[in-house]
Length: 417
Figure 1 (tube, helix red, strand yellow):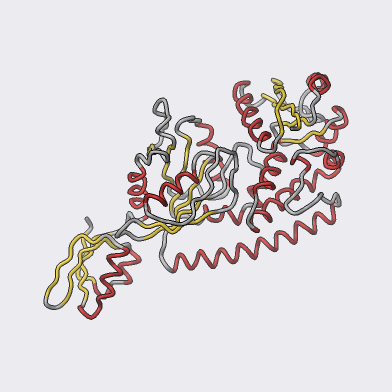
Figure 2 (cartoon, helix red, strand yellow; figure 1 turned 180 degrees about the vertical axis):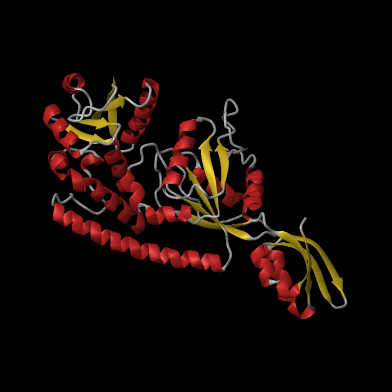
């Protein structure tokens, strides 16, 4: 494994907060088989323009590189092109930042055409202004995914004009994919099926919740990948779920968020994140056993940055079976266990309470020659009462506003309760 030295700067946060961020950076590096040998934090009032850290700290870092036989130095914040150039010249070792590391992980994990294109676009947008500074870094030999190999590429062409052309081509491809997804979304609207999107910090348990809900609602489709790993999956997964005698909904599992998520990734993943923006309800998933308020705040910040902070949000805490105490959460939440399935029923009821909160009770008269209508109602709605009379079947059922329009010619009256 390649050996790394992690560097953080505590100038807008405390030493403890900076160390917590470096520990997270260590896990990110490990995802690319890069072993962290040591961590360095400098307390400073401001960033040093030339090398990010002060000259004294840079000298200390160079000494540590020699002592520990370091292959790579990873900075916890995004570096400017000039800073990368100066640091590599001074330290004589490969230098990358948190953004570059995260995008390298995304490049390894992307599987679908959409995700592959989005990651490639993010990498190229990041590299374009940094070509001069990173020329030596990208040409270094040795293992490690930090060589910036994109999906299907043997190396990145260090040519600004070619890179700009590739960015233009990828953007056009993503526009096509976005248009196709828009057609699919309009079809869902036409079919009046609400969309529920899982959002949250990476590795919070979103995929586990999707599998738990699918199992509880007897959906026999293939389970999505569950793995104790940062960014285990980048590809959007969707399942059509339905509680018996209730209308269906589409559940979508999206890419996880993380603090200091590169702006290039947020911009490039516009197509994937459109599923979040167009959702009717967001299930905000939080690790309840290892609770961290900062992870909640980070998710809220990302949702705001993509224009999804106005969407109704249901907070769900996971890992109830191993939590040592009740997390100090200010918002209302549901505490569940995907392992024991505790409170999954409460989550299902809460989802329906949110997405179908405008539903009303209607009395519907179904003629005997329209028997199929009754079976349709029974399959997709909650039937409260059924009475057979001489002139037809009388059904008291809960309908959504859209369904009320469809069955308007059969409705006799409605009740608000």
